[in-house]
Amino acid sequence: MVTLDEIAGTGLLQKPSEETPDHFERCESNYKPLDTFSLSKDRQYQQQFADIYFLRLTKIKPAVEQAAAAAWEGMILGGETATKVDRVLDVRQGQLCWVAGTVYMDMPLKPNVLEDVSKDRWISAPTAEHYYSTENGGESLMLEDDSGRIRLVGDALKDHFLVTGCIIAVMGTENANGDFEVIDLKIADLAPQPDRWSLSKRPSNGKVKDEDVDMAGLSSRGQPSKKIAIVSGLEFSGTETSYTMELNLLLEFLLGEALDSTAQSELAHISRLIIAGNSIANPSDHTDATAPAGDKKGNKKYGYDASSYNQLPSQLLDTFLSTLLPTMPVTLLPGTFDPANASYPQQPIHPAMFPQARAYTSLPGAAAAGSEPGWFDPVTNPWEGEVEGWRVLGTGGQNLDDICKYVDSDDKLGMMEAMCRWRCSAPTAPDTLWSYPFQDDEPFVMKESPHLYFVGSQDEFGTKVIEGPQGQMVRLVLVPSFATTREIVLVDTETLDVSKVKITASV
Image 1: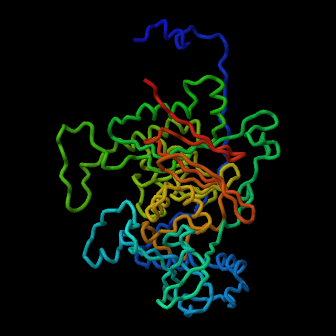
Image 2 (image 1 turned 90 degrees about the vertical axis):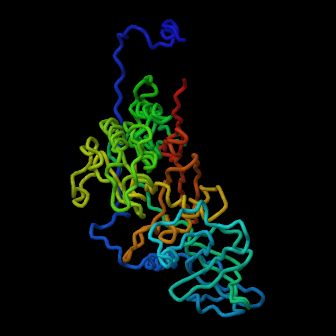
Image 3 (image 1 turned 180 degrees about the vertical axis):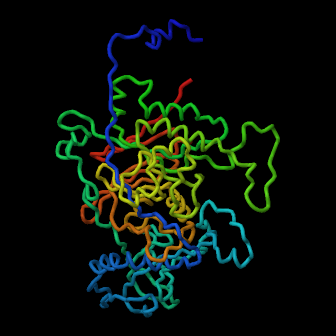
């Protein structure tokens, strides 16, 4: 039992101070979202999905061929000079050559939509935890283009991480079995990287300049630089959860409440909050707390059962956002469980889901007219934009989770790096990652390398910096699920250094 004397000793019970409390203003957020992954309102789904692969190959193949030519042009092995082959079907047995194309992984556990249709299976089959087989001989790796497909073999493939949809160039020769024996392999590597402030103008009244900032994020004047807070997996549900108190503490932390003046001064430099997916918990966990025990709604065979809908999770999220928005701008990405379309790219959660927070969104049509984004900005997943001059690319985590099913590895940062070097943020779409059937453009191709690339809804925090052949520097960040880890991520906007903050409630 805690006595009043013990509470008084902590400083919580004391007479009001005569000193005037410090007043802190939150730093302004310099923010410019891009519509890279926005879909038109008249989108159609009758077209073929294969066009995505052809568009991807057309965009990335020149860079892959350039890297391959720089490495293999004029190379002589065994007295034979390696030559370029334009198409997969032009490969000849015994000829040393190199060719570029799209990787396709034939895996026994991978879902096959054609098989589902042939079996008259009109509901999605259970999703496997992984696509690879623990038994040898069940998988094959192929290279394809618009002319055909050839099987790749060789020990050189074991040194490279590959999944369906990535564009590569391979050098080798066709063997007697008709397989292509790979000797070496090349990828496009990091795309050109834009300069900072390439899309927006640097604030003329900025207090901190690039040249005045050291690696600790402090300017020569001793002022801390701005920070971006990134959180994922809030997972509001309709029931009392074990982390309800942590959610309240997170809100107080971002607002700067119940903290001393020193901590409030630091938190005032958080200029924006980015929520990276899964703000709503899995719908299977949305049980109505007011329903009698044992009262289970029967599943409807057709249509939507409105009686089973629980509006409480979205109301809790709306309250969380509306409490935070008067003091901090928020960018909201949808996730797997959020009320948005399931296929990639997910479109923004409709503002109608947030009766209170939508007052802070921009007016309809304002983005098309070139107006400034709203204080509350629901965006797509994936999402691309410029924050404090840095090019930022972020996802809710589905692209990385699907890639993880292809390989028996826990190196998620390595998989993020591979996506950057492949120049594709969702290589497995549309094969195993549901995607819109694009016809004119392939938005998942990284035309430019971001400065910051984050992926939400992960099991644990992780970060590293990768470097490209032209000096590109990309900060990779795994954003942990708050419901699992109680952690959020803070990114320094001058050095791009990353730190995590753990929100715990001690009893």
